Length: 286
Ligand code: PMP
Image (cartoon, rainbow, N blue to C red):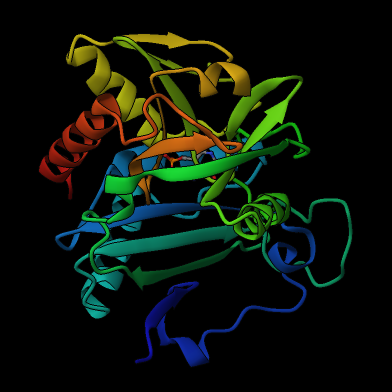
């Protein structure tokens, strides 16, 4: 069935949705994106996505083409038109089509390209993987050094995901200077006793909005949170490990580079944090 997608103000059948070959998103990965989950037809943590989108655009000297209210209206319209109950809305803003290819940014008044589409994912919240956990391998983190900007240049994370697939596991954790930065498309955590440990925010990692929510809920649940670096060796010896992202929510990690984490079974803390996250975010969904 053909989806309805949004391109620069129009709602179109996906076959008719077109972007210029001169678009800087296509030629230079000059664009940013957000992925918002939909549960029960409602948007999860919408404000968080709007705030981060605004920040990414500012960091790249791009103008935000819409107010948060306008973004919300477009998201809701796409969810309705495509009948999404569980799934996600993908949003991308690029620096647009300046005509000729040039490394220099085009004039600031060049119209950005705005594309949104939906993906249905029935059973998203009830993922069987959450009951068995992910297995991950480690790979070197050779991405650029502005990982705090959510750009569409996702080639290296794709390569790392393929390395994981070829190794027969679920994902890869990226390692730089001996320490885990994050997963290919998620933030990484370990658990020791009552303490959740995750890398501190900097330009080394994406500032996950699920990370912000989960750390807030963890503190409310009287868990200790320590924001610091950890190694693969420390993670393998931890009681539990997990990842967070807007589309995987909280996902336990049970094996790292072939070594079982803790008992090798899905942990109590990861399971509890997933429950709390889903409960609270469903309540706040818009
Ligand atoms: N790190 C990276 C590299 C990511 O691509 C993502 C997914 N967008 C995350 C972390 C998690 O961020 P969020 O919780 O906002 O989805």
